[in-house]
Length: 117
Image (tube, rainbow, N blue to C red; front, side):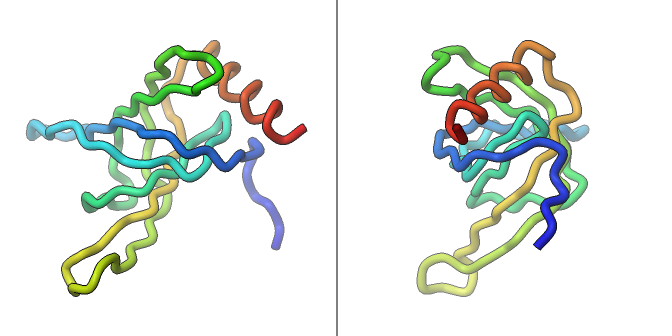
C-alpha cells in the first residue's frame, strides 16, 4: 500500500476534547486518539462524526505537558459496532488540521520523530 500522507504518523493514545463547529451550540465531547502527525489526528468517538465536519480540538502530548488547540476537518470516517446492540456504534475519524499554530505543529512533529527513531 502506498503511503499518501504528507506527514508521518505515530500511534498515540490520549484523551482529546472536541467540539463540532456549527451554527447550533454543541457540547464538548471526549474521544481517544489512535495516532497523530503534524498534519492531523485520528480519534475514536462514540458520538456520530461525519466527513466534512469541522472540529475544534484540544489535547496534550505527555512529554510536553502543554495543551494543543487546533481546528480540523474530518476527511474520513469508519463506523463500526461496539457492544451487543445494533445501536451501539463507534467512529474512527481522520481529522486534517486546518488551523494550528506553527509552534504546535512543530511540537507534534518533534514528538512523532522521537517516537519513530
